[in-house]
Length: 554
Image (tube, rainbow, N blue to C red; front, side):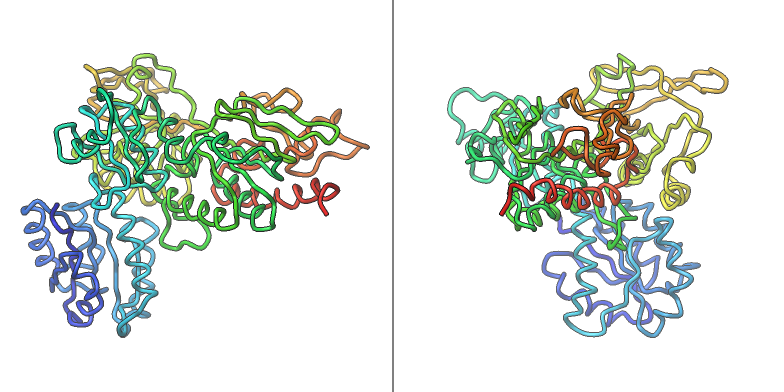
């Protein structure tokens, strides 16, 4: 693999700018250009040699461009995946900031930084390495591989495994059986090979028939560890609400277990970039936010089990513990936090349901996005998740079309995302439109779209369809003792029917109709369906857990 390049654009202070990137020269091809034209020539040379540009870093003034933002626009057309940074010289930082900061809101560049004033400016380098780490998640074949997958074909299961590993923060490589990597894994497999084979972290090679097989191979099943005692709190779901509950419960000394059916992070973990989460001015991917929270909870002693689908909750009464039943075993807990989140609604177009995993995807499918290079793709949905998916796909695809039934995006999507989408020339929005048919020979090739106002239909070529259609709760496993609304969301607090109130008083705000069972996040009726609000609810539920456990604890 060619060494990725960092292209610097510095006309007024080239020496200072180059010195600021001296530490990166060992692992990146750092090139200095003194104009936009020189940067375009450097890009042409890098790409022509089979390489790519990881980052463009420019002073706040570019001599041969109307503005640095116009220069970035030209460079973005050449390498859409590259991160773009303005490193303003300290003599111009305050003067140029007002005119340039607004460009961040429309995605014209990724960071406005002060050029290093000397060595070891770690605040500057922290921003640069964060952006390079984010760029690394767009590389189809990462240089550092934690998990090797051997398969002769890129089928739906293989793609789902890679997507799970991406969301867990484990870079993976896909190898044909006759490659060096493939033979390395096959040498560790006994008997006739059956694909896909997965080899990770020096564990035994696994023939995966599902993503769950991989999750259990990596992280174990509950019955494999010592869970023969009753834990203080069991959290069902590893999204933002469940992670926040785990961090705060474990940090306060409660024995805490988290059961997650898929990958840590839940639906939020598929977001390529969350820009409106408090404390992350440059944004953070859902995967990184989830993994940082997971590591934080682990530090306090929480235990995670992924790939664990909870089939049943048996409420405990009269001092008996609640019991969570999974295929791998049971977990007994004095209290339970339901944070199982929501799933995307099904499109319910049969020909397209048959192509799920081969061109049709529910959610952002980060791994599939990397395979859309040069293709025409469609995103169905008008929420923030759909907007974030469209922005990420635009780094690879030739065109991205957002399809919404409503007459405008502004009704359901945050303003910052609407602005970024409007600025991005690769993205178009088709309002009052829905998908009514589609097909292809073995994978998606075309879609039929209908105008909801006129009923007019048309057929368009399509290589990828990403469905982010809104929320349906994960509640099939919840017993009838726990009240839910007509849509299936869990009722808490004052929303609980009055016949379940005790002494004329409703349950606490995040408490359900079963004592000792609480609910937080998107699965709760009336929740805001935002990452920050889910995290807040997860943290807020812990005092209620303490109050419930208090009579039983010294």
